[in-house]
Length: 247
Length: 267
Image (cartoon, rainbow over all chains, first blue to last red; front, side):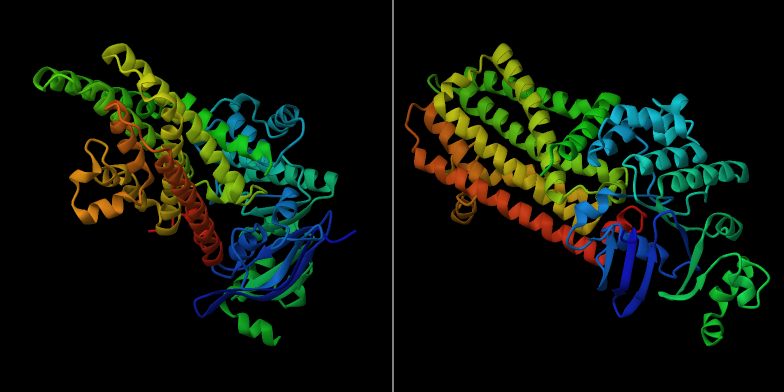
């Protein structure tokens, strides 16, 4: 079985600057990979290229063996995402948004699937509420329900818990983990919350200035680099990437 | 092209209209106001002008056809603007939806909204002012076809402009029908125009429709070849507009504009 996501020698150049500079990595089925790095490291650029809304300057992206450049529709049929900067349209209700996206993803038996997700993400009471009127936590749950509509094999989560209080964030993390483990989904997860990353990710990739600086198990990686916590390691990557590269 | 994703674009517009009567207002009220205004102007003109000239079929009919053209164009652009206003590009385009399916959804939305506007205008113009479309005979079908195709083409072109230049460029799109109207002779024969304007007018498909309307109301025959030429021109506009939109979309994907559109960084 192919890896759910395979990224090879991916580059993106804006003007004369590389936002992403030759990164390669994979995400396997039933694996949660953290994509970490300071602001401007190239995380969102990478996610946008995987989602087909940004054309790479070089390199290939394959989702379930399908090339995003040449088989875009087939590759994206088994992919979905949530991002804090891409909320569901606030002028449609939760149900209406889910119905529209169910049609876009050509979801079979969509009425039953939507009902199932409304229940799963505790959204039944908000079914007919416009998304713009929901709290941050409710919006996040609605966006996650959208992300699960097509039973994706690859899930891209760009800071999925960024706007949630610790209690809600824990709840959402547990739900995502359960779904990912149950359905064998491959997840690429970006977050600035290192405790969260340590809790959910099987593997992390540290991006800095468009390149992968470090890769490994989030529980052991800090010690391997002489740091007491993942957060310390993150700070080092952000402040002194060259020191780490040399080490 | 798959039907369900096209339906999704249409359904989104339906939900928006159902949820907000303000969106239905321009669809029905502005065209109704236009018909009332021009209906009374034609009535007044008939009282002061020499008998024999049919102002209702000439002027009011032309206004109705012109408003139909405007509604077709705005039907496409407004549906597109809804995605601009709600910053929905990332959600929409990071899916299996193809650009052809997206544009087809916008066009289908326009077909339905412009048909609603057309029915409202016809009912009002015939009930209140006695306008009969039967006066145009079999030519009515090609008249509507040419205006529909040109409106669709301009709508797709306008959407491409906004995608290329950013959300603020929508202000360039709204007045496009008004900018074209002096050239296409909605209210006067093309012969009235100075030479350079006539040259432009003959490159614009709707010009042939309004020349045709006047000829038929005056009891003359209007060569079918002119309308065939106009249909060809409007089909060419569609091809060019789709080509333009696809080119702009691909550029937006290459430069990152499409991804940034959602992040409110486009100025």
